[in-house]
Length: 90
Image 1 (spheres, helix red, strand yellow):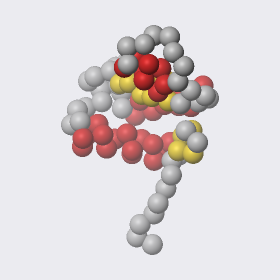
Image 2: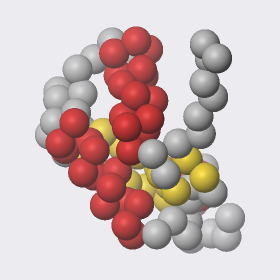
Image 3: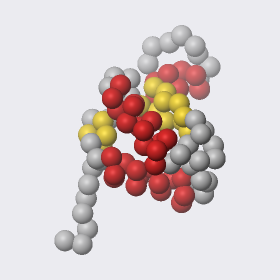
């Protein structure tokens, strides 16, 4: 058919690297209208995401998008930080 539906992420893990690059390309160039090699990038992940997934995200950001710096933060920790709480249970 003309339209193909793909899901590059399963259970929070990247399963198709090329599709993930395309997904990240859209917010950089269409929504934010900023070249990814200019600002540092903050990515989020679930609490129990494997280290290999984090490494692959870093490889994509540094190799494909040439970002100058990046950080990967756990989503629940960012929620605590946003609410002004350092210790907490999410």
